[in-house]
Length: 619
Image (cartoon, rainbow, N blue to C red; front, side, top):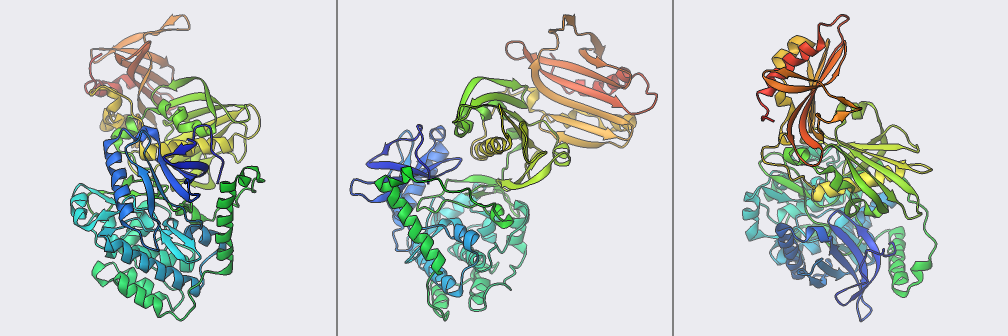
């Protein structure tokens, strides 16, 4: 836990707030204490999401679902205010770690621990399904460990069985990739058997130390869920038949929670956690009490946690608290039309329109990067693809941050190396482990090719940690609510730049080109050169540059500005329309020849630009 910041409230409802438990893209979780001294976990939603009617409706459903489930193996809701300026929900605080954290720290469970886990999860399902709900997001981070057994939390995407078909028909099905059932991955109607499949995946992970469907990318994880039989050879024999039955692809072949409880009860072992986990549970309780009595505020900070193992990074770790995990963020589903929604650290999935319409400077504002310090000075846009700004960190040091989205994916991958960490399942790339001016990049795994590159340059020291933290904050915001520009409906910024390249004509000039796309650009590169088109909103080309007026020429009856002209290359600018101040939407083309004695490059470039002019709006 961490101390509250100046931005955190001192109280919500009747609960005095004590510390930060965790923070995500949609909100944060705080430790609170009621007038009677009882500790609660308070989920508070970020203010910027409260104006979204869909989100508000989902949060109200979360409250209603959570209030219905009150069994000994779940965490009950004690209070809420879904209608306030910043909605919040208080649930019973469970002073115990998440199962996922314990497997990461201590390794796989013993048979005794597995029996207690299986029994407790079966009891939790009985209580959840008794109310007519399907949990939909059972996973190791949503299972807390107490001395009495596991507790299931997070009913943020739980849904009544009779409502499920209508929800599925909208094209949205919810869950977490490595623990969702095949019917969830295919966006089919769900039954209680879907939760049983998730229990099987959780038991397999607890028994082996890794998800049974682990893979390097989200699409591969979902493919494994749908079509690959889980490898259960490392699961202890007493538990193996239970896991295999739960992981049946056919829902009808899985055991019911009652049958699962019966099977778990037949395991010949004492249902108890390993000693080291029981000690950790005691430590969690002691930490909560220290925050409650005020002694934690003067405690010595703990040493940084050791680097995570690879599988830990692939399946994100959640805070071990009795609170509903931060709600739904879409990822692309497979098998049927629709989307699957991952609740924790989801893969980043943007539509093509969102990728082209991103307001990059909005991603550099304090509501995104505020955890890194205080913004100073103005945001400085670099067209529509970049932005830079200065922040003062908590020590008062000035740090320059720059975000760029126009670097091609191929260039990003070839010019960097993996840093050994991930952000929302995307490997973090960089040129240097340590540097004063440091870049960190991630590449999206679906949709339009998009590389996000964050640069951090402090006054002194190593800028790499700040670059990665800032990049993670940007990705969190993109995953839940990507900020978009207010472009005109017919704005050229909405166009796919590759549609402006006549591939036949370009192939004849550069020779068998390979195209590489960015959100606002397209380059066709062949053996004899390349032709590239970039669309942007920059300083108007008719401005005086260095005391000189940029020359113009006429191509296909249209005035075009000559940006650069040389023996081997030529660049043109087509101004589409003024936008604001001294800026304008424009199309920038570049032709470069690798031939030893090329013909007039601007004549060649004009021939390649002419077909594109017919597709562009008039100035």
